[in-house]
Amino acid sequence: MQGEKFPPFFNDQIPCGYRAIAHSFTVSNVGFSYQCLLIRTVCSDRLSRLFRLPGEEKKLQKANRNKIPVDVRDRDLEEMGINYALFDQFPGQAVFVPSGWYHEVLNLTDCVSINHNWFNAANVAHVWDHLQDQLELVEKSTEDVRDTPGWNEQCQVSDWSLINACTWH
Image (cartoon, rainbow, N blue to C red; front, side):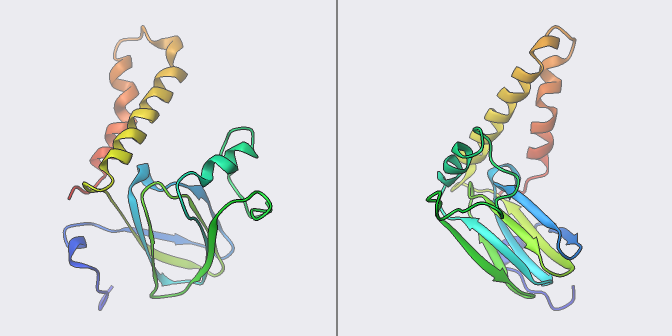
């Protein structure tokens, strides 16, 4: 993209391109493995919801059988006491999603955006805790095949693929 300017700390990174059709929806998520996220919209009108503080997800879980709902658009978040920001994002604008904050996006028009995921000393503990939690979930869900040769290594495959996809600073 000729003429695009990004902060200098992104110079050594390969950004992730994202495209979606109008009226598509990105479900509530905490970002790639608890990393920080910068979303730069190239072309699209988007409606984003950002849950302001880590901890708000517990209120969502409480109202949804202890799971984060995939879609909260039809829920009365004010009545549930959930603290969030709802805002529009237009071409050329960027949104920063801090590590551990849930967010979701409705693409009002066809969308192209550039996403940067990263972690550093400020959030590496969150990333590490998340990876350990995910490993524990994988181990518990595959307990019945623990005696399979290579079980431990296979449990860690997805976690290591996440780490290798990360940019270190």
